[in-house]
Length: 93
Image (tube, rainbow, N blue to C red):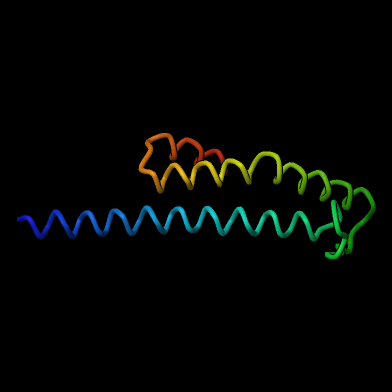
């Protein structure tokens, strides 16, 4: 019986680390797209109208201000086994 608890603990820790890793990767991808996009460095060029580019700039800034902190906080709370992590991560949907 003791081995089953250890196996469940390992599986639970594995899922926590996977969730944290996915949140960190998503946050890093959003940061990269926002920095390389038209809002900052303008390395990524979108073939759209000027108003579409303005909307993309606003979305990039919103990602940096809202989504990235939610992903980082939620992922960190998930790794620390804090029950509030689910509320932060569900806000990113």
